[in-house]
Image (tube, rainbow, N blue to C red; front, top):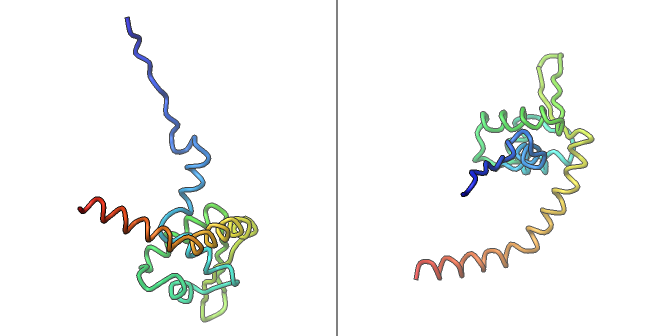
Length: 126
């Protein structure tokens, strides 16, 4: 007689890797981190650095998520004109060092990845 074994899956909140990685593994967060490495940046300049295809809303959401995780700091000046600036926190700088390794690996291997993708696509579409 078989017993029904219920397998308990980790929930998103219970898995530290998924929980933390989801905060900066979206389409924009790594680009934002790379853009902030040079120092404090205003919102408009940050949007320019990240790319024209990010909307103000998406940039704002990504920034809020990274601020919530302690990766970036948001500073609002109280003197007119009001300025909003963003910078990396110590935690964000530490993460950047790891992201930088991934960035170097990506640049070094992009050609091989593109070649593999093309070969795979040709094989699938044949």
